[in-house]
Image (cartoon, rainbow, N blue to C red; front, side, top):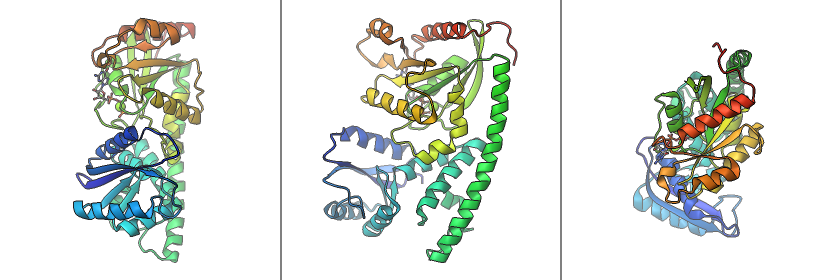
Length: 369
Ligand SMILES: Nc1nc2c(ncn2[C@@H]2O[C@H](COP(=O)(O)OP(=O)(O)OP(=O)(O)O)[C@@H](O)[C@H]2O)c(=O)[nH]1
Ligand SMILES: [Mg+2]
């Protein structure tokens, strides 16, 4: 999908007062995250959603013209389309249409490196394909390399595709279950040896990996790109006389597809069983508050309450803002203000972690891995 030209459309309901500018910007960043080249982007206000095509006829007409003018054969619609809406749009626009879930699955598919990550993305993509069973444009199509388990469009073919996909899904679930039982054993061992686990979570691009690298002297990819990290990384670190394990996790985003959350369940379990959850927030982002709401929503979906005592808010990228009145705010809700880039505030975070661990009765010296 590299460097393919695309058009980005963000449709929104006029009746809902939403920040369309922000959503469009995020949509453009999503296509950039997979090296698509956005030639034109537009937010379109809709009176209502068409059950058949999502967009209204007038707008589809203007989009056809735009697409021909720019000679583009891929359009990203920044919402979740029903299979019928997607198919009808592809017919009317005479080009590939990819929706939000489809694109996020593509991004995840291109990023997964670990065996577990790859299995999880494949599982999510198969669940997604099964739900629509039209020829869809995902990395799986390329992976198949012509073997073609989703060959023809006929009903019979679709039935047999469905069967094959279901079988594949079951096989994948088994494999993932095996990996997750290994994880459970590792988790049990860590608990037994009293090694605290600290996960770094947050909206994508908030600076989790940058902070993780600082805390563990590692070199995980940190980049100004959505979903730079996909596979969670675990590293041990020793500071202030404490051995701890830090976990860098996949970033969250608004409307993260449920299929992905389910498929990544075993990775996300690392968060659930952590002793401390560092919620990394990018204070320089215009949608700082909105992002927090989204992160808490997803945490809630995986079983961590927003008022969970293990959560420590880490307000990152303070080097980018002008108002540096952190003392006051920090006292208000116990958040730690820092810059993972410059290192400012990191010692405060370490002290805070130490304090939390002591209060949780972690033995500070007699640890073994
Ligand atoms: N100015 C500034 N930039 C930062 C800071 N922390 C991270 N960044 C930048 O923000 C961008 C994203 O950082 P990452 O560490 O990759 O963010 P992430 O949360 O791991 O992102 P994903 O893995 O994509 O979810 C990179 O360009 C970092 O250099 C900071 O404290 N100050
Ligand atoms: Mg990262």
